[in-house]
Amino acid sequence: MMADINMGKLVGFSLLFVFVVFTAFIPKQHVSALPLFTNSRWIVDESGQRVKLACVNWVSHLEALVAEGLSKQPMDVIAKRIVSMGFNCVRLTWPLYLATNDTLNSITVRQSFQSLGLVESISGVQANNPYIIDLPLIKAYQTVVSSLRDNNVMVILDNHISKPGWCCSNFDGNGFFGDQQFNPDLWIKGLSRMATMFNGVPNVIGMSLRNELRGPKQNVNDWYRYMQKGAEAVHSANPDVLVILSGLRYDKDLSFLHNRPVNLTFSDKVVFEIHWYAFSDGQAWVNGNPNQVCGSVVGNMMRMSGFLLDQGWPLFVSEFGVDQRGKNVNDNRYLGCFLGMAAELDFDWALWTIVGSYYLREGVVGTNEYYGLLDWNWRQARNSSFLQQISAIQLPFQGPGFAETRTHKVIYHPSTGLCVLRRTLFDPLKLGPCSQSDSWQYTPQKTITLKGTYFCLQADELGKPAELGFICTDSNSKWEAISDSKMHLASKLADGTTVCLDVDSNYTIVTNSCKCLSKDSSCDPASQWFKLINSTRRSAAIESTLQLDTILDSQPTEKLLESA
Image 1 (tube, one colour):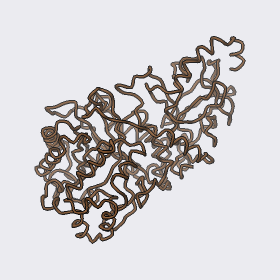
Image 2 (cartoon, rainbow, N blue to C red; image 1 turned 90 degrees about the horizontal axis):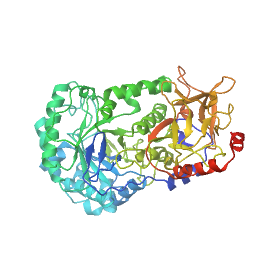
Image 3 (cartoon, one colour; image 1 turned 180 degrees about the horizontal axis):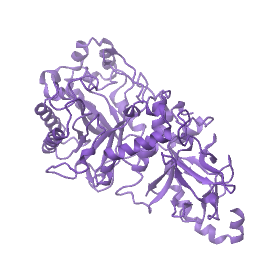
Image 4 (cartoon, rainbow, N blue to C red; image 1 turned 60 degrees about the vertical axis):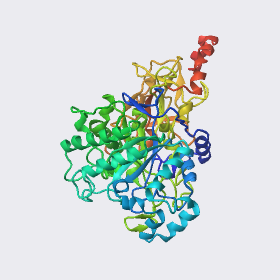
């Protein structure tokens, strides 16, 4: 199950169940009130309603200077596939010289491929997208944006690098202002040109000023000097777009903003971005205990960038991702931790990547992209279970315009992307789509109650399903988030045994001995990782919960006590 990318390897889960759940509840976000603005930590539309960016990266900054995949599938097919996977946005990369070198950007798609000896790519584009084969490169780029617009997909233009090619290293000459390929004045000129070119193109909702600043020249003073100039240049040329500023150290460090905010002439348009991969922390997830690593990594992220949410700035995780083959232990363990925080903080994000294969990457023709959602031929998903796993975070849990109910909790299970559901008061609790989640409340008495009722979550016996009970004062009704990850929900049985929420092979919520709490680096705790997430979204389950008052009023107290 989950093609091993499920960190918990919940053996025996029904593939049919996952398929039905995923296809029935693909997230949909329709955006019409463009352009976008910021309202404190939220991105909102003209009506003031939150728009959560659930984006995927589409690479267009390599040597060919053509959006990847157009030799494999029609552009419109790729755009529609992006929508069908639940994404509402594309972070479309571009190299600086595409905007500033008029000789380069005026050569045609055919000529670009010919110069690289990519004969098969020419044939592929002629077969799948013949109308772009003789377009200048910059016009082909614009055509991709138009195709995404026709499919109601928002676009963020990301200046990924200066000289076309794979990114990134500390010594590639593209890392920081003043590097061989990174002239600040030319960069500002390129930003202005792209902002002007896409002024009035409604689905271009943001511009990311520069990807992964890095290298020996990086310093805070030059960051403020040039990033503020770049931001002003973009806003002057195109006041509609969000202006997205990246940090230092490969886009991991924005800590300098703690006490020194940016000084810009405009407001309500500024977003900050970070990147967060497993390899951002080396092999820590393989070599350490997952709970302890998760706690440490999350704490570091909050110190380096997450604090911006509390300061009232939107935070866009513009790159995260995992090896879609599911055999990378470092990635697999990281993913549950990342998804737990993505749900809890409810930030905007962009997955790396939609790309299944590249025309040419680092000298290799047809390189397979194992972090890509699509297969080598761009025909189908590499791992449909991964799409299920991220589906819950593709929609907002809260924010302006989503105050549909009072704030409540949902019990989220990152390893599956599902939430705890109640079918009836007396059936076992199960995992299911978060859009149908029950409304829970975590009380000062440490009980997890079904909101609007007298019923609370209880541990029964080791290895048995968790239950809803009526008497909520005993130890087996008290729950605490334990371990460094704060994702084990633990309770004590009557005999003093500590148990944790878990999931069995039928998606039933059970209680088992708590596992992998510390030290052991060979253990995988993911099946026991749960997060209590704040939500203001209404669901079908909330409607049925509201009917419980009637049920309770109609039942004799003796009968309720008996069922408890």
